[in-house]
Image (cartoon, rainbow, N blue to C red; front, side, top):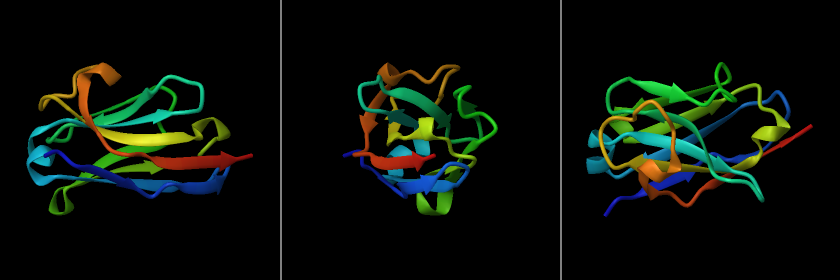
Length: 125
């Protein structure tokens, strides 16, 4: 059974930083692309960043230069370091596992099969 468990959300002021963590069941971690998504109230879930089991990463334009996705292989964990946070970054953040190894060139919700329960990020102005 695939498990993805997020943590690290919270409330910060604009300009602050948070690091989200996603612990992934071992087998899935080793063979599948992992992504971070977010969903604000009343809005569609949007892709934020992805990382494959190698080192390939991809970011949404809205977070480039501010967010960094990374993997810790010893802990089966994928991180999302979020710096220079803005109020528009406020959302529930989810990690997800894509069906295959490669992340592709887009971050599309439909390509991701398994999801965590989410962690809330709130940025105040």
